[in-house]
Length: 90
Image (cartoon, rainbow, N blue to C red):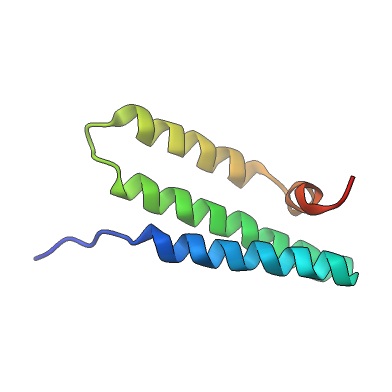
């Protein structure tokens, strides 16, 4: 049985589209509820990209795997408000 290697490029493209969507919604003045919803999708997309990269990393590279795991944990702890704050103009 062949093992599946995730293609992180597609996940990166989806994340990029979600980030662009969030920026467009901010520029158009969308309601806060919709902005927070898309911000959570951006956070989840970032986590998916990291997990795909982590799965693609050679098992002997423990340092890189641990670093990605720490980043995933940090992202999971973020709220939608904090993700949204990254995109709002100062």
